[in-house]
Picture 1 (cartoon, rainbow, N blue to C red):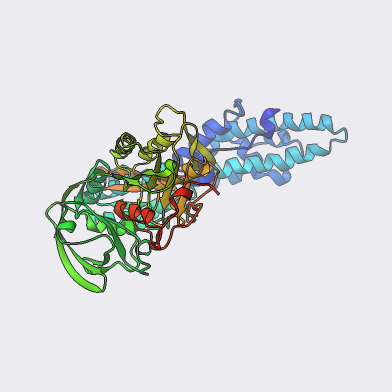
Picture 2: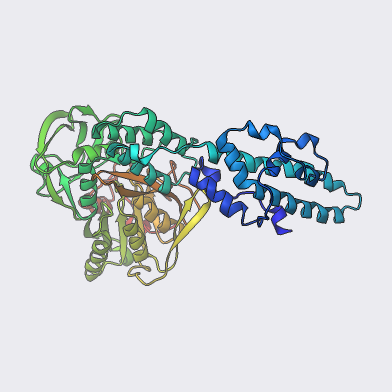
Amino acid sequence: MATCSRPLFVSDAASSASPSRASLRRLHTVEVVSLWEPLPRPPLRAAYCFAQTKQCSRRSTECLASGPSPSVSRLTRPVRRMLSRYSSLMITLHGNLSRCYKAMSALRPDGASRHFMSAGFGRVVLGVVLVMSISAASYTAPSTSALTEENLLFLEAWRAVDRAYYDKSFNGQSWFRYRENALRNEPMNTREETYAAIKKMLSTLDDPFTRFLEPEKLKSLRSGTQGALTGVGLSIGYPMAINGSPSGVAVMTATPGGPAEKAGILPGDIILAIDDRSTEDMDIYDAAERLQGPEGSSVDLSIRSGTNTRHVVLKRQTVTLNPVRSRMCEIPGSKDSSKIGYIKLTTFNQNAAESVKEAIKTLRDNNVKSFVLDLRNNSGGLFPEGIQIAKIWMDKGVIVYICDSQGVRDIYEADGADTIAASEPLVVLVNKGTASASEILAGALKDNKRAVVYGEPTYGKGKIQSVFGLSDGSGLAVIVARYETPAHTDIDKVGVIPDRPLPASFPTDEDGFCSCLKDSTAACNLNAAQLFARS
């Protein structure tokens, strides 16, 4: 009786996207046949029974005993071949359904359920099987022998998104049908046309974080997460975080010895244009990609410093990225807060967690008793590094919930094995340039009440990307999951909400931070004695 209440098919693939020919066959042979064991029957009588349902009595076995119908011969050859293949299945369905309604009739002495089970529900189930079978028999997949090298590259990109993308509705479209239409209608005669077709495909997802990466961009991205980057040595963010300017991209830091620093570009400068393209409405991720490029190539920047605007041509070079800067601030006041360790984390590359540990140990050697972790204008990086850094500050508790369209898929927690600073008072600084892995870290420390968070709402990128390399050296950055903070807060497009605001003029560098804490008359001053208090 258990099979009577089970759905006919329960495959996630069938509910989330148009099934392929292979998946339809899998549904028949696995999802359906496993529920009803087939019995031998004449091949076409089941089809005749279905075609003549209006003439059948309640007990459709009378119909099964009848001869074949002339209407069957008029069906197309693929459908007739399908009916022959699945006739025993449909007869077996009828036999199992008959046993079901007999059992249900035993519960209803008047037999009221009998007509529904045999003549109503039975026709629906058989009809669904027939429709699925006709779909499988009539669909013709493209011949792989007819596909060009460019077609295969497009298919490679399509499959990566099909398998990994977190939203299995694909922004409310049939991902399978899009593939078929693109192969028929999109020009893919050259590599440039194929790249354009892939970008067009990704644009239908309406997801700015799922994007195509040309070979040089993929190489640059990977080198950046490994601790080196080919670019001009700039860390950028949103200008509102510095001086309230309504547009453009702000310079947060210039790497010592890098091309930008040598050209006199300073923190607080505004990049108005990159290679003559205005940054007024440019996302910082797009701006970062444009600043990177092959070593030795040039980029033309329009820079505003205060009231002056100038053009600067910089030659890109490989820049080693140190993700952490730190210093000890000695503040007059209570003994507990007299020495504060300031740690500025600029990115989550492969060196980030170890660099944070080293900074903590160095500051402790100077008798630091409390810490400030500055995540402002940190746009993220490697997800595992964010998890490891959270474990440095936490001895227990959930760090993040990883979710997909079905709900929570995985949970990352701290177990104390990697903890080195779980007891000292901690403050975290954030702004709207704090994104991705930075938000995971800030959310974990806030929700577990490990830190007091100061600043403004963060960027609100509540999704996790993976990078997939394609066979020609290009790649895709694909959103593979969304996440929730330990309090089950979905921060996407909302951000992590801080506990307290920062003064509008609060500086972004370590020297300025210390100065504001020391000078009680400064507009940016924070009361050091109350800095770590929760209320």
